[in-house]
Amino acid sequence: MLRTASAASIAARDLYGMASFPLVPYSNRIGEASFEWDGKRIELARNFAPEPHAIHGVGFERSWHSSERKRDSVRLTLVHQPDDSWPWAFEAQQCITIAEHLLTLDLSAVNLAPHPVPLAFGHHPYFPQAGALLSFAARAVWLVGSDGLPTEPVTPSGQFDFSQSMPVEHAEIDHCYTGWGGSSYITWPDKPWALQISGSRSLPCAVVCIRNGADAFCFEPVPHINNALNLRDHEPAIPIVAPGESFKASIRFRAVPR
Image (cartoon, rainbow, N blue to C red):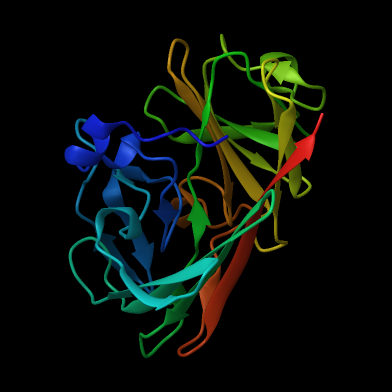
């Protein structure tokens, strides 16, 4: 039910050709790859040319190591040291567990900096787009401008309203939904199973990215709105984590009979 990575994507280590990738220590874009923190202007490396923004954090571009393996699960660990992509140290872990009809991602990130810093963790899964129908409730959707950054939150309506099951194949959306309720469904006419996606309370947002004519679309459970570090007066804000403390979240993908 997740998009299968092609042999070419695997050979090329094409991050955007995988089935899913981690979003840590932040989700989506940071406008102009910069933000203010504790009275200082933080400049980040731009990693999504030709856009001038920083995107998706550092976890999806770095190597993780397998710190624990069992018959039905694996724990992947990444220790990040300050660099031009993110100025604060953290240790992130993904525990990936497979059960009958269920895939669980337990995500955590520990702040290794000596002071409170922004630290979040979501995931960026892709799903086959042909024939797919998506349904979930949400309180608001942040529409984006031509620069890829959010402009304003509105009540979902028309092509942006998935409170009833809607086809995704001909949509053109790259928006962040807030108050999504923690549960969504994807169905395909040619499959006897539907997919239920559920997220913990620490993931109150969902980014939906659908490109007309693409082979896959995204429904991403995430902790905060897009460009949150430059929209500090808006909720859900990026979590601020004290030294030695953790941000934790979980996502479950459950196959259910139609």
